Image (tube, rainbow, N blue to C red; front, side, top):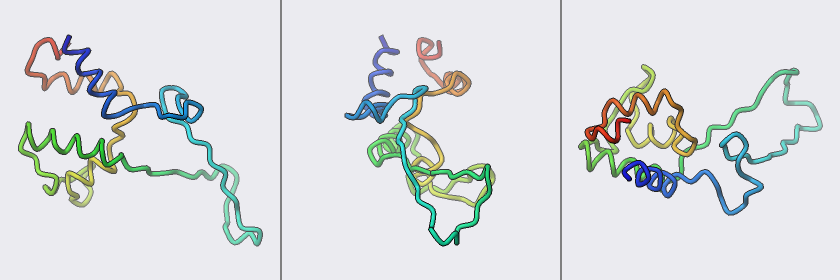
Length: 125
Protein backbone atom coordinates (compact mmCIF):
# COMPACT_ATOMS: atom_id res chain seq x y z
CA UNK A 1 0.00 0.00 0.00
CA UNK A 2 2.81 2.45 0.85
CA UNK A 3 4.57 1.61 -2.40
CA UNK A 4 1.40 2.46 -4.35
CA UNK A 5 1.11 5.75 -2.43
CA UNK A 6 4.76 6.56 -3.11
CA UNK A 7 4.41 5.79 -6.82
CA UNK A 8 1.30 7.98 -7.06
CA UNK A 9 3.07 10.83 -5.24
CA UNK A 10 6.09 10.50 -7.55
CA UNK A 11 3.97 10.45 -10.73
CA UNK A 12 1.86 13.41 -9.56
CA UNK A 13 4.82 15.65 -8.79
CA UNK A 14 7.29 14.45 -11.42
CA UNK A 15 5.28 13.43 -14.49
CA UNK A 16 7.07 11.72 -17.33
CA UNK A 17 4.39 12.53 -19.88
CA UNK A 18 2.77 15.72 -21.09
CA UNK A 19 -0.45 16.51 -22.95
CA UNK A 20 1.38 15.89 -26.23
CA UNK A 21 2.12 12.15 -26.28
CA UNK A 22 4.16 12.50 -29.52
CA UNK A 23 6.63 14.61 -27.53
CA UNK A 24 7.00 11.87 -24.91
CA UNK A 25 8.41 8.48 -24.17
CA UNK A 26 11.45 7.09 -25.80
CA UNK A 27 13.12 4.70 -23.39
CA UNK A 28 11.19 6.30 -20.52
CA UNK A 29 12.40 9.80 -21.32
CA UNK A 30 10.70 12.84 -22.72
CA UNK A 31 11.80 13.48 -26.31
CA UNK A 32 11.72 16.94 -27.88
CA UNK A 33 12.93 17.33 -31.45
CA UNK A 34 14.84 20.51 -32.30
CA UNK A 35 16.39 21.85 -35.49
CA UNK A 36 19.39 24.16 -35.25
CA UNK A 37 20.57 26.36 -38.09
CA UNK A 38 24.23 27.17 -38.61
CA UNK A 39 25.35 30.59 -39.84
CA UNK A 40 25.64 30.84 -43.62
CA UNK A 41 29.02 32.57 -43.33
CA UNK A 42 30.58 29.58 -41.45
CA UNK A 43 31.58 31.73 -38.46
CA UNK A 44 30.73 28.82 -36.20
CA UNK A 45 33.56 26.34 -36.44
CA UNK A 46 32.80 22.68 -35.84
CA UNK A 47 34.04 19.27 -36.84
CA UNK A 48 32.23 15.99 -37.46
CA UNK A 49 31.59 14.30 -34.14
CA UNK A 50 31.09 17.54 -32.19
CA UNK A 51 27.96 17.48 -30.06
CA UNK A 52 25.51 19.89 -28.51
CA UNK A 53 24.27 19.43 -24.97
CA UNK A 54 21.34 20.97 -23.16
CA UNK A 55 21.16 21.61 -19.45
CA UNK A 56 17.50 21.85 -18.57
CA UNK A 57 16.55 22.81 -15.01
CA UNK A 58 13.80 21.01 -13.11
CA UNK A 59 10.39 22.64 -13.05
CA UNK A 60 9.66 25.07 -10.20
CA UNK A 61 6.89 22.72 -8.99
CA UNK A 62 9.20 19.70 -8.74
CA UNK A 63 12.01 21.75 -7.19
CA UNK A 64 9.72 23.36 -4.61
CA UNK A 65 8.21 20.00 -3.66
CA UNK A 66 11.65 18.54 -2.88
CA UNK A 67 12.76 21.69 -1.05
CA UNK A 68 9.61 21.59 1.10
CA UNK A 69 10.19 17.91 1.98
CA UNK A 70 13.86 18.56 2.83
CA UNK A 71 12.94 21.48 5.09
CA UNK A 72 9.94 19.78 6.70
CA UNK A 73 11.51 16.36 7.31
CA UNK A 74 15.20 17.18 7.73
CA UNK A 75 15.47 20.89 8.57
CA UNK A 76 17.47 21.60 5.40
CA UNK A 77 16.92 25.17 4.24
CA UNK A 78 16.87 26.06 0.51
CA UNK A 79 19.49 28.77 1.15
CA UNK A 80 21.92 26.36 2.86
CA UNK A 81 25.22 26.07 0.98
CA UNK A 82 26.49 22.64 -0.06
CA UNK A 83 29.31 21.37 -2.24
CA UNK A 84 28.34 19.07 -5.12
CA UNK A 85 31.11 17.00 -6.71
CA UNK A 86 33.76 19.00 -4.81
CA UNK A 87 32.90 22.17 -6.72
CA UNK A 88 32.34 25.62 -5.23
CA UNK A 89 29.43 25.70 -2.75
CA UNK A 90 25.94 26.35 -4.12
CA UNK A 91 22.57 26.57 -2.40
CA UNK A 92 20.45 23.48 -1.86
CA UNK A 93 17.81 25.12 -4.07
CA UNK A 94 20.28 25.53 -6.95
CA UNK A 95 21.53 21.96 -6.52
CA UNK A 96 18.00 20.52 -6.62
CA UNK A 97 17.01 22.74 -9.56
CA UNK A 98 20.09 22.16 -11.74
CA UNK A 99 22.10 19.07 -10.75
CA UNK A 100 19.51 16.32 -10.21
CA UNK A 101 17.10 15.04 -12.87
CA UNK A 102 13.86 14.79 -10.89
CA UNK A 103 11.64 13.68 -13.77
CA UNK A 104 13.43 10.59 -15.12
CA UNK A 105 12.73 7.14 -13.72
CA UNK A 106 15.12 6.23 -10.90
CA UNK A 107 17.77 3.62 -11.50
CA UNK A 108 17.95 0.51 -9.27
CA UNK A 109 21.30 1.55 -7.77
CA UNK A 110 19.91 4.88 -6.56
CA UNK A 111 16.71 3.29 -5.26
CA UNK A 112 18.79 0.80 -3.28
CA UNK A 113 20.91 3.62 -1.87
CA UNK A 114 17.79 5.53 -0.78
CA UNK A 115 16.26 2.40 0.74
CA UNK A 116 19.10 2.38 3.29
CA UNK A 117 17.54 5.51 4.84
CA UNK A 118 13.99 4.15 5.07
CA UNK A 119 12.59 4.15 8.61
CA UNK A 120 9.73 1.79 7.74
CA UNK A 121 10.89 -1.78 6.85
CA UNK A 122 8.15 -1.97 4.19
CA UNK A 123 9.65 1.03 2.41
CA UNK A 124 13.12 -0.56 2.42
CA UNK A 125 12.01 -3.49 0.24
